[in-house]
Image 1 (cartoon, one colour):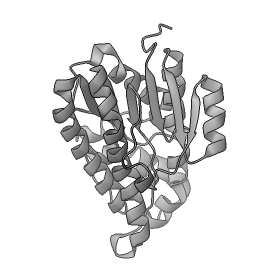
Image 2 (cartoon, one colour):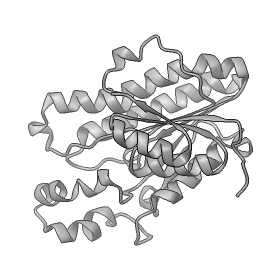
Image 3 (cartoon, rainbow, N blue to C red):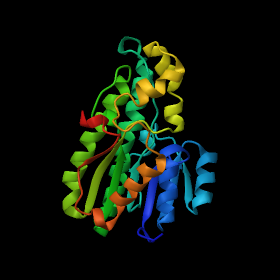
Image 4 (cartoon, helix red, strand yellow):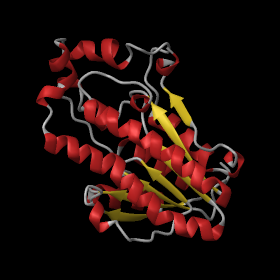
Length: 249
């Protein structure tokens, strides 16, 4: 495997598990020095040790602590996220605010923190892990859908501002990927939709997909690696779906 990212420093949020871990592994395999950032300090340390990177134990819901920070990274992947499922009329405001802070405000704060160094070096790659829900909506996920749509707006604006200075910003928009975040949704999806838990995969996770399997974390990570590469230097401000055709409908 070629060291296509040798010498690059990649900061990946939510990298202690799931998609973030898969991306940390993929980037390290291609020569990048990976900063594994996660609220799970033990998990971050374990992944960092496994990939030969470094751990950053951090709570991205505390955006005030990030404001004014300067972070040196060639690649930023905003991946950290959570999910809450409620009808709008029952959605707790506290949970709404948490999702907005973690999944929209934190990516903005981190983008703000890495851009000065990227501009000085004339190179940068910002990859926002959005979702098919950044392009489409689903019932009972008002906060998540709103945050991901907002992240798409941030992606496009960053692309316009940063592109002339050698920095690209793109989004990856996966459908359901079988990670701990998605596995934790099964019971809530069944409850809110009035179906059995063993029906969630077929009716919900694959219901909109023309390809009747879920993407693997490694497939999403491979797309991120390409977007971070020199070969993707003119790809900017784009949404890259990996959803089996869900967003094609």
